[in-house]
Image 1 (tube, one colour):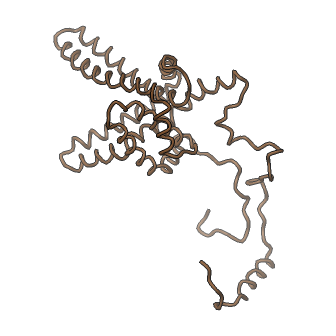
Image 2 (cartoon, rainbow, N blue to C red):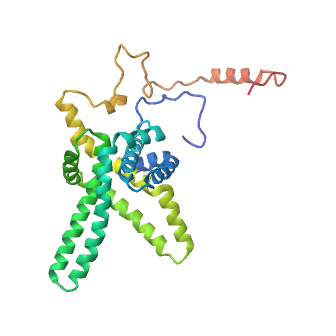
Image 3 (spheres, rainbow, N blue to C red):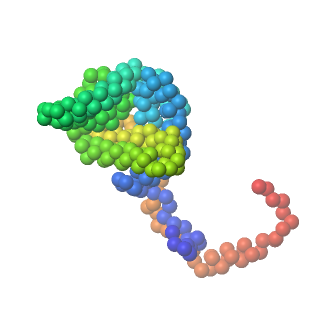
Amino acid sequence: MGLFSNYNNAGPGIPKMPQEKKGFFKYMEVFGRHFWDLALLNLLYLVFCIPIVTFGPATAALIKVTRNYSQERSCFMFHEFWKTFKSSFKQSFIVGIVDIILAVWAVYMVVFYYNFSLYYDIGKVLLVVAISLMLIIFLMHYYIYLLIVSTNLKLKQIIKNAFLLTSLGLKSTLITFFTTVGLLIVLLLFLLSASNIGLIADLVIICGWMFSFIGFTIGFNCYPIIRKYVIQPYYESRGEKNPEFDYLRPADEDDAIFTDKGGSEAPVKMQRGEKKQKSNNNSSKPKGGGKRIS
């Protein structure tokens, strides 16, 4: 659209399929569309995490909603969050408890092996091994909760698939990882700033944005990997079509009410005589005296 658009001529209409952007631009477009929804979702997640032991189910519910947002699926936030919180409670509760134990173990191992490495060279090797193991487990979590809310696999199968998908979707995994690390670095820089403004900024980001942002990034980058290697092969093996792509398929002839030619018809141009006649008709209308209905 230019600065001086011509509104006398009809355009080609709206294309039936959206002209989707790719990569980062699509990410920013979809994220911007759901910005305030994600802020509200972040607060909802923090409320459900208050008992601590509900960390797993709350995370699963968060991941389900952010996955729907990132994949542009229709989603009623509170309904979907509560529904997923209940339906995936058993598996996500177990994973959540294990996560809490692993977090405590990770801190202890790093401190222990670091002090051990100060006196023995083998301690440095053990420190590297411990950090590498923790990193792998951390990356697997990009897929664990997504698999819980997207499939009906058993927990053992979920852990196995999460390990395999971490390497199969290495590019998406690393993009998500560096995005997460980048956010944590920003929070750390704010925290180290010698002012109360930095602390306030951290609280605003953490309470109003951080967890839903990470969940949205995981859903946007990592769910397509699950769809490609887990969900799509399942439907293909059964000779069925993946229902999540139904909105992209044209309607059958029996179901179609009319033929949509949006984006394909030729623009209609008005002749000079028609423009002049239309202008005269508009100028001949009486001014005032009529009842205005708002």
